[in-house]
Structure formats: C-alpha cells, structure tokens
Amino acid sequence: MKAQQLFDLTGEVALVTGASSGLGWRFAQTLAAHGASVVLAARRTDKLEALKSAIEADGGEALTVQLDVADYGQIGQAFDAAEREFGTVTILVNNAGMAVSKPAIDMSPQDWRKIMDVNLDGVWFTAQEAARRMSTAGAGGSIINIASLLATRVAKSLSAYAVTKAAVKQLTEALALEWARYNIRVNAIAPGYVLTEINREFFESEAGNAMIGSIPQRRIAEPSDLDGTLLLLASNASSFMTGSTILIDGGQALTLGG
Ligand SMILES: NC(=O)c1ccc[n+]([C@@H]2O[C@H](COP(=O)([O-])OP(=O)(O)OC[C@H]3O[C@@H](n4cnc5c(N)ncnc54)[C@H](OP(=O)(O)O)[C@@H]3O)[C@@H](O)[C@H]2O)c1
Image 1 (cartoon, rainbow, N blue to C red):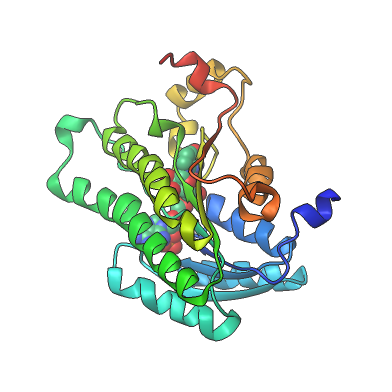
Image 2 (image 1 turned 180 degrees about the vertical axis):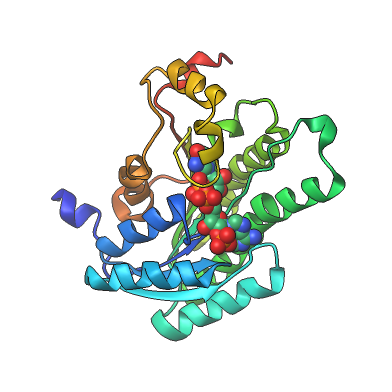
C-alpha cells in the first residue's frame, strides 16, 4: 500500500482537545489535511474559529466546540455537537493540558487540584466518553493521549505535571487492555520539549537555553516533528498497535539516565 493510502483519514471524525494553540492546533490541521472531519475543542473559541477558517481555506472540514475538559458536564455536550455535525467520533486526540511550574513545597491545594482536573481527570473522562460512543456505534476507533517525556522522568518545579503525565501513560495501557474488545486502540505520544505557549517563557530564559544545549539533537521540537507519529496512531497504519507510548524527544531521555 502506498503511504498516501496508508495514512488516509477520509471518512474519519477526529476530536482534538486543546486545539486552540500549540500542538493541538497542529494536530487538527494535520488530521484535516489527511481527510478527517475535525472537531476543534478548547475554551478559547475565538482561536478555534481562526483555525476552522484556516482548515476550510485548505479544503478541509471543521467544527468548533467550546470545551473545558475540567468540567465533566461539557464533555458529553461536545461529543453531541460532533455527532450532530459529522457522526460518531472515531479519532480522539486527548491533548488539552497545562503546567504549574512551582517548587513542590510551594504548590497550593488549588494548584494541585487544577492540574489534576485538566491533565488527568480531563483525559480520563474524555477518553471514556469517546469509548462509550465508539462502542455503542460499533465504530471502533483510535484514542491518542498526549503524555510527555516527564511521564517517565522528573524535572524540578514540574512535580505535579510529571505525576499527571505518568498517570496518562498508565491509563493509556489500562484502557488499551479493556477496550481492545471494542476495536478501540489507545496509544500515547510522549513529546520532549516543543516550543509552544506552555513553555515559551522558559525557553526565552537562560535556563531554557542551557537545556537546549543538553539535548543530543541540540534543539527543541517544532509541532510538525510530531506529524508522522500522529498520523501513524490515527490511521490504520497502526492497526495492531495499542497501549504504546511513543517518545519523541531528540534523544533527551538518554541524557537523563534511568
Ligand atoms: N510543548 C511541550 O514541550 C510539551 C511537551 C510534552 C507534552 N506536552 C503536552 O502537549 C499538550 C499540548 O500542550 P502545548 O504545548 O500545545 O501547550 P499550549 O500551547 O499551552 O496549549 C494547551 C492547550 O490546552 C488547552 N487547554 C488548557 N486547559 C484546558 C481545559 N481546561 N479545557 C480544554 N482545553 C484546555 C488550551 O486551550 P484553551 O486555553 O483555549 O482552553 C490550549 O489549546 C499538553 O497536554 C502538554 O502537556 C507539551
């Protein structure tokens, strides 16, 4: 089979959380460019509308839905809207995420709760909603969770973030095991550092520059560095893969030991 056919997503319906910036924005564009109808979900709908226009200008199809993944009640509504417009969601990119960058000793209960609500509960309940609908429709599908290099490593001032990403890796495996029977594959991407709003301030600092120098490939990633892995996991090219977490880090994990 030629690569173009292998990664063709025509007829698929993809919902991307956190599509209003950074990786989510790029994931949505890439899925749409390969034929999927794309549901763009986030809190900032003005940004989503701009992305929808860009996707449509390139010949793609998109719908915007306001979604705060920390608000359980909104998740079902987003899937309802997706179904009304395009049908059952068959690809979920569970990308919405945030970081609280503070020494552990200074983290407030509110800091802890917020990051757990978004990075862990949000991923769990969005995956569950997708899987319920995929199984009811008999559609099967692919769920792609966005973990991190910090799912298996740690960094100072990112303790709670690392805990949530380790949990995302673990839930990827647990859900893959349970949902294979419904023909639902669950995999994760674990990026190293990619320049986006989540870390722009850090990479403009001296410490950020020093970190870039310690990465074997001597750079951080562009969102486009994740295109190939996204398409692999979203498409039938990975039809026998489930429960995997794919690390994309320019070799950084090799320098961190473990
Ligand atoms: N950049 C990196 O180096 C890196 C490395 C490893 C993993 N990651 C992971 O990649 C994912 C995307 O991060 P990014 O780098 O693209 O960061 P970003 O540019 O800050 O984007 C984060 C996205 O998540 C959305 N979001 C945040 N809280 C949300 C909520 N409660 N409900 C719905 N959407 C929410 C934001 O949209 P709204 O504000 O509009 O809701 C935004 O679109 C995250 O899970 C992050 O942990 C990033």
